[in-house]
Image 1 (cartoon, rainbow, N blue to C red):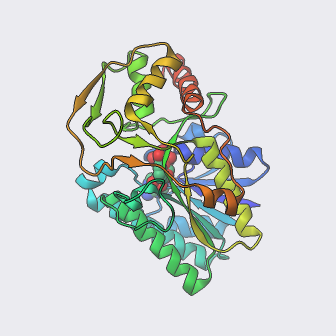
Image 2 (image 1 turned 180 degrees about the vertical axis):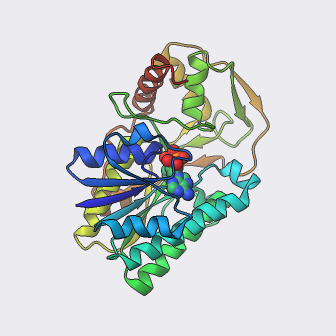
Length: 328
Ligand SMILES: NC(=O)c1ccc[n+]([C@@H]2O[C@H](COP(=O)([O-])OP(=O)(O)OC[C@H]3O[C@@H](n4cnc5c(N)ncnc54)[C@H](O)[C@@H]3O)[C@@H](O)[C@H]2O)c1
């Protein structure tokens, strides 16, 4: 099968590309390299284009016949989205719509869409099921929900087949440490904690320690990036078998508090992670973890790396490799 991967030079996209190719899929990456890295695409064919330009994505889909498109290309920082709503709506909505129209015009391949647990906002109940209320509390979460709706409409009107995957927190790296998270402006807890452990940053600033959780810090579900990649592969296969279009949560189904994450980073690295507390940030729910039954039953997916320590070990390996290569 041949798959187009938008955003395939980014963190999750590059790992998914590597896993798909390892499993014998043919892939092409489409990325404007604004946040991604050319070397992360390795020897895969790379089309440098911008999804906001209708012609760029139209040409990419016209150039070859694809069985599926995996759509990662987007802006994805909730905090930043509240400062730059125009950029987020423009990139995520316009990009999503241009992609869907190109899909419709060129053979209607299946669409696998990177959505997020942020569409649930402050959920009433954990673990979060797919039928929980949709109530995003950031421009980012809202933009992802709007693209979900566009996809659902294209499904109804043009019979475009799709799987919407709502990821919880992606983390970790390829187990050999050769591909991982390399965001220019890092905002995720594990890479920042690893920066503190390796002396690149002085301390970790935790937002809020007065949440209604056992240690007062927020609880999140961390899913290994390779497990995410496998879920994409399974979603492509599911649709190719004639599976019905649907939305599915991707998480390990267990939450860890921010303090537990920092303590696990200390255990894995053998280094202190100095920390301080800052006030709560708007838009952070206290507890967020997935009910992943649907992924298990519908896709036949199961996480291979559900333990936080293993996730951090792979991230640490990648982090150290980058330090050795002088890339940080
Ligand atoms: N990282 C997470 O924990 C997480 C959680 C939930 C959902 N997601 C979603 O997963 C996807 C990938 O996330 P990531 O962490 O790998 O992000 P990333 O920033 O590492 O990758 C995004 C890629 O898309 C490319 N891109 C952005 N705008 C583009 C455009 N206009 N045209 C072409 N390419 C463009 C970037 O250059 C980059 O390579 C995003 O859609 C994000 O919303 C991520």
